[in-house]
Image 1 (cartoon, rainbow, N blue to C red):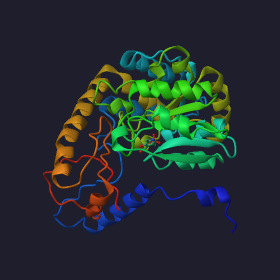
Image 2: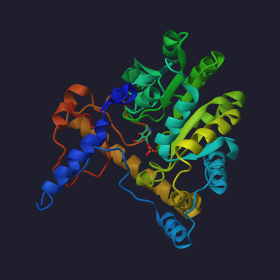
Image 3: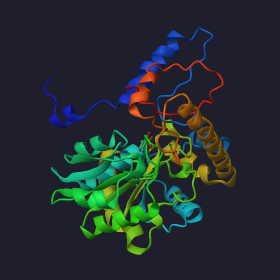
Image 4: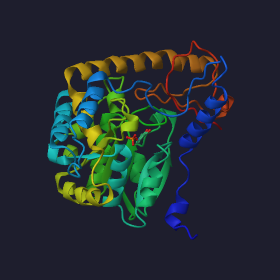
Length: 359
Ligand SMILES: Cc1ncc(COP(=O)(O)O)c(C=O)c1O
């Protein structure tokens, strides 16, 4: 069978391959006493809190399971808008929020709406590995710009300016980032977006880990940038990480007002809508009890980071920059080889989720 070039360009998402291998290993050792701690895939070990679970059960029992609008339940878009205002001081009209099947679908929709064949999109190296494939699936080319620990593995405005050319369509950033857990300083992000915007380009910023930010300086949404800047940036987010709902497949995209109908049209065709049950459940994420629980869990993740990173360093798995968010420490390459085996035998290590490169 002839496979499309587009499909041939797409590499496996190796963390999914590692997770597959790890679960095969877990089955093999299921009957032994040695504990297995998964350090492979980046997902919280917490599940959705009680009110969210109850809301899902209620939606099913009451038959609230028909398609929603392609942009999502209006009530959910409103709750997210309120959350931006109360948590990040950002004014985001519900009409700019599009509910998606996870950040993955949000990234796909944004790339399909904005990238022409041959367009270049700048992103830091390292980046979330799927990002270059979202760009490539839209027939664009990802341009990976090497970054250093001193730069917190993020792009600087100088690097963006130096790499910009007539084919460049924009930048794709993540803050905090996976795999480094490090964020871009708000003032640097503003400088980048000012430049990109002045060139007629787009700034896509994945804020999926923003809810899990541990340092006041970094915990700001790009959507809170002043005036036109905050209105023109495109932010990707999700219920997967802070809201502990990875397998529910729910996220969202915030776009400039004029782009919303374009994204809606694509979403209507490609997805119809995100999971209705998950959307009804997600309404309960914003109840005071749920938000309180999420904050307790955020504190727990921070405590794990504060324990885990010094211990990794002590083991010789040097983490060059203390992550300020998320849960994915990245030890330097030469030492990480020692983590070739996925089983870590100590029951005293907290069950921190994390990605450790295998070679
Ligand atoms: C930076 C980043 N963006 C996007 C995603 C995809 O998340 P979702 O589960 O919302 O599709 C992930 C998942 O690990 C991620 O780490």
